[in-house]
Image 1 (cartoon, rainbow, N blue to C red):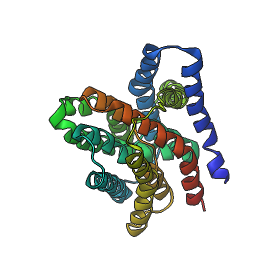
Image 2 (image 1 turned 90 degrees about the vertical axis):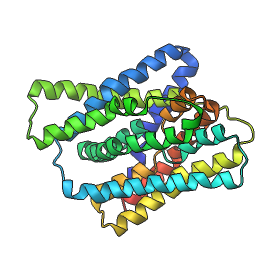
Image 3 (image 1 turned 180 degrees about the horizontal axis):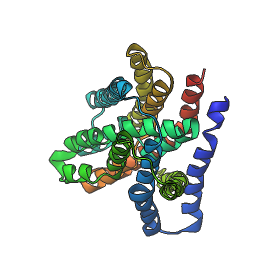
Length: 298
């Protein structure tokens, strides 16, 4: 229970973001600016700062990533099942399908940092950096017949991937940042968690599309219950222990990424339904993530 309580400040920041957007009426332009600042500046600094000063165990990286990818593939397969009993327009289905396996990087790094400090952020950063291209590739593939987006250009410009790669290159090269640089990166890293979670809360949308209740319940259950079960089972089979095992299960239990909405809108999809599912998985994860964290701590 103590481990679960550690996550309460993070979820309180998400709720604060939702309240600020509703009460302060700062407008979409303000919140879009906050999210870009966090995404392109603060979070890459958080990743570099954590990875550079954390001892790396490259031998454990392969089973760690294999478990994370297996959980995502499980979400993709389970996410495809409703097409056999729910009749939806192809573009609508392709839009909501993303919500079965995509993950919120902001919450990922915040939870890892809160529970495990810099080693947790470094481990989660490795998974996030490797999984972002896969998530984007599959999502765009499902939507590809209905729109166009510069996939490889977006992957190449993804700041989370570059932040992860930069941190690992510097770490493996034995680079020790001078004190002033450490302090600078530390200040940016500190700002990233709070602003990132507030931005997640500000993006919550509670107006769903009629007729999608059944598939919505299914996708929420897949994302928050089935995927962590897959990761927990396979992680044990592959011999993961300690931090790596805990991080990969928490990764699998994350709510859906807000970028799923952006991609759906950019490719002419059903953004309203995706926004609802992002909000639903985020709010329900306030119950399920602490449960998974408490289970992992025993």
